[in-house]
Length: 92
Image (tube, rainbow, N blue to C red; front, side, top):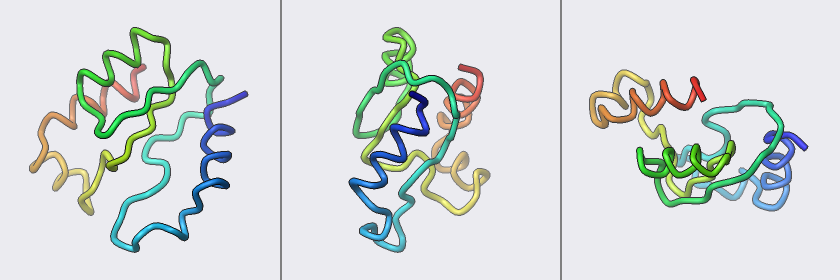
C-alpha cells in the first residue's frame, strides 16, 4: 500500500466538498511512496516531524493546514520555522 492510497481512502470518507472554501484542505505534500505508518497531530511542528521520523512514519495527517497563506514567501514571512520544516519534509 502507498501513502497516496491511504490519502485517497481518507478523501473518500471525508470529501473535500465538505470543507469551507477558504480552508486549505487536502494534500500539501504528496509523496507516492510505500506506506510505513501515520502520525496524526493538530499542527505540524519540529517535534511532530522528529516523532514521525523516529517512528518510521511517512504520512503526517494534521488538523490545521501546514500552508495557509497564498504564497510560500508570505507563509515563511509569518512563520519562518516552516521553511526549515519544508526542506526536511522533502529530504526525508
